[in-house]
Length: 579
Image (cartoon, rainbow, N blue to C red; front, side, top):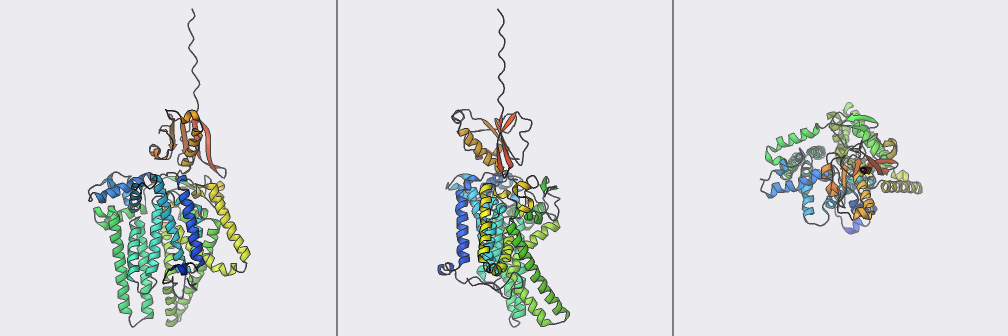
C-alpha cells in the first residue's frame, strides 16, 4: 500500500486503498502483515480459552431469542413466541446474530455455550479487524495497526467481547457500516457495489439495535460532502453528477431499511417506521433505574451526569490508549481551528477563491470526518439527551474501536519523531505490550474489570466503579469448587449431590448449564449446602450458618465468594430411663 500524506482533518486528497489486494502486495506491506499476525494470534488465544468464560446475566435471554426468532420465519410468520415467550422488550433488538448462533449450535460442532462465546468473540474480533482499512483510509499508514493493537490490549473491550451478547454484534455492525460509508465516499460519485454495501451494512446496524440509524446519518453527511466537492470542482457536469450522488444516497438508504425490515421481526408486525420509533424511544430513555458507583459516587442509571461516558472511558481505557487519544484529539482540533480560521478570514475578506479552497479541503477530508462523526455524534446525543446507561459503558462499546482510530492517528503523527529514537521507542512499545499481556494473564478470564492507573488500577477502583457487573467471577468460583469436590472421593462418588446456589441476580434458577459435575440446583440460601456470591448479589449468604471457604481475587480484591454450610452439631442422645 502507498503511504498517505493526508491527515484526519483538512486532507488535500482522500486516502486510497490499493486497487487490488493480491498476495504480492500484502506480503510487502509490513503494517498489514503485522496486523494480520496480531489478529490471528488473538483469534488463536481467544478460541483456545473460550471455555474459561462463564455464562453472564444477559446470555440466557439472548440465547432463547435466537430459536424463537427463527421459528417466526420457519413457521411462515405464525409462531409469535419471539414476541411473547422471551424477556420483555427483547424484541426491541434485532435477532439476526442470535439466530445465526442458533443455526451453528444446531450443527453440534461444539458445546452449546462454547459456540455462543466463540461466535460472540469472533464477531468482536472481526469488528476490530475492520479498523485496519478504516485507519488507513482516514489517517494513513500505521493508524489502522495502532487502532487494532490498542483495542486488543484494552481489557474492558477484549474481555467483554466473549460474553456481551447484544453490544458486541452491534460493535461489529456499526464498525462495518462506518467502513462501508467511507468506501462509498471515496469517489465523488460512488460506485454501485459500494452503494449496495453501505445500504446492506447500515441496515444491519439498524437491525441490530435501533440506534444504528445513526450510521445512515454518516452516510448522508458523507454524500453531502461529495456533492459539494462536485459543485466546486466540476461546474460543467455538476447537475448530472449531483443527481447521481442523490440517487446513490437514496438507494443506499432504502436498501438499508429493506435490510432492517427483513432481519428484524419487530418491524414486520405493524407500520415499520412506527415500530422502529417505539423501540428507539424506549432505549433512548430506558425506564430501568438502579444505583451503582461511578468514580466513588453513587449514580442512578437514568439520571447520569453528562460526563458519564467520557469519565468512564478515562478510567477503563489503558493509559497509553488515553495519551494517544488526547494527542489525536488535540491535533485534530488544531487542524479544525486552522481550517475554520482560514475560512473565516476568506469570508471576511470576501476572497471567494480562498473560501472555495478551504471548503474543498473539508470535502476532501470526508473519510476522516466520517470517523470523527462516528465518535462525536453518538457521544453528543447521549450527553444532551441524558440517555439511560447501565452496566459500565457496554451500551457504547461500539465507540471504542473508532476512538482507537483517533488514538492511532495520534501515534501516526508522532511516528517521525519516534523514528529518531528507535531503540527508546521500541522499548516503550514493548514495555506497554508486555505489561498488558501480564495484566491480561493476571486478570483472566476477568479482563474486562481492568482499570487504569488514573482510577487506581483494579485494586483502587474496587467498589468505586461497577466492575464485575456480568458476575463472570461466579463461573471461576464454580470451577474451583467443582475441582475441590472432585478431589474429595466421598463427594465425587456420592449418589446424592450437594445443593448449590449461585447468586447471579435474576438468574439463580437458570444456572444449571454452568455445571460440569452433578449439583442439586437451589434458589433458597437457607437450604443450600454451598453458596457462591457475586458482585451483583454479594450479600446472598448473609445471616446464613455458613463459612467462607474460597474467594476469587484479582490484585487483592475479591469478586466472588464461596460458602459452605456449617455441619450441624449432633443432637445429644436421649437419656435412658433408670431401671
